[in-house]
Amino acid sequence: MDFLEVEGQYPVTAVALGEAGNEVFSGGIDNEIKVWDLRMHKVAYTLQGHTDTVTSVAVSPDSQSLLSFSHDGTARTWDIRPFAPENRLLNTFDGAQVGLEKNLIRACWDSEGRKIAAGGGDGTVTVWEAKSGKMLHKLPGHKGTVNDVRISPEGGMVVSGSTDRTMLLGELPR
Image 1 (cartoon, rainbow, N blue to C red):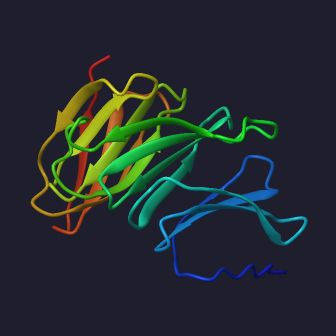
Image 2: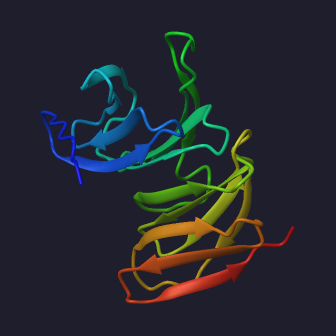
């Protein structure tokens, strides 16, 4: 097995692979998201806007957008199309506006790219509409920080894992 090592200047806290496999998106403690061109072995461009550590990055199902979460309490969506405008920021959602009381840790898209689920330091999983930021569901249950969250392929269930040593499976009303 061959490995390609790409080294940055700061510790990496989040990664996502582009659909074609020629780009890697990395977030770090420098508050930036770097888009690495794996053919050239260098940073193609940088997404700036977060003011604290980037904790999660996820490519949308259509590979047109990137979702990022940060300890700054915001979620952001970015335009990652090859010939996107220079200002690639699409939306910024404040954690408090989308129902998260503490740090945003991990997030994911649903299979259609219409919903985003997020876990945070308040022990809840919040699901909202990706385009508008409207909160759709807030699911309590964990007694610790939610470390990861995923929406099932058909969109009817969400699973989360927490520092409280539990995994919870919740049903999402349609």
